[in-house]
View 1 (tube, one colour):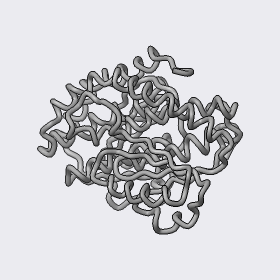
View 2 (cartoon, helix red, strand yellow; view 1 turned 135 degrees about the vertical axis):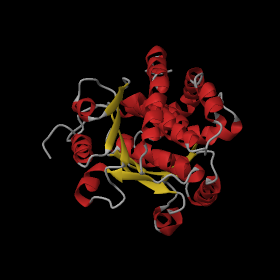
View 3 (cartoon, helix red, strand yellow; view 1 turned 45 degrees about the horizontal axis):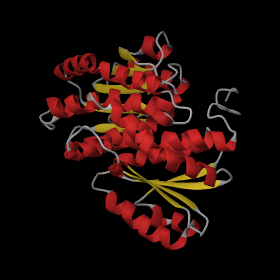
View 4 (cartoon, rainbow, N blue to C red; view 1 turned 60 degrees about the horizontal axis):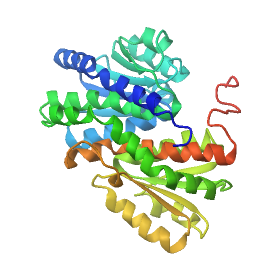
Length: 336
């Protein structure tokens, strides 16, 4: 595969998986102490990756889960938030301004803060009451976050008596590395062709729903806009017909991200309409990927898998456009 270091990728996956036992101990302890609700507090990509956690929780549990944008949360507050809230954060750099401020805000309120960080010795590590470190860079960050967050969410649900499949599912997830590599391999030729075809495309629609809606939001903003400077709109499949439909034309690039949960009919509805108008409809579907988990658990892994597949498109798009994914004009380049 082009510009892909399998050993590096597997190392990221295995490192995240290795944290599970310690995460479980921490979650069990926090559960026993008691908390009123769960706040998942992020910004940009981390906010996007928290959205599937909320979706999963709401389909399986009555546990109050709030996904909030860090900067807005500090200014606006939230009547559900209190010293009895369990607040979870993720940060690749460990020094993201909004996250550092939000952790401080939560600490000052007496709430419990728990963070997952890719770099040790950083402000996020130092400020959080509990933190775990597993290194990853942008290209494999989402896999790292999901494999860290799954034990948080599902362990809480297990402890609440709302997810009896915990032990079996995570025993199966432990062997996921080669399956994710295979997912990349089977996406490679499609991604290569798609990148060549779209090297000069200046606008994309990225559509998702359910557990992968957060990945549609993330891919549009954090990859195509931030890393490729391409105008892109993320669209929830359930909202497509309430506005964005009018921008659909024969040459409109529409990238459909299919997961495996109950919202697939929403995606089908968009697909069935879009192919009548546009000649540029692309489908990424996690159902095409073999996984080591039982059928009933696949839907929960779909955000991780869709990100793994999309990384191949990003990699080839970088090459075809001669635009490194690490190049920025403004982000962390200026004071703002």
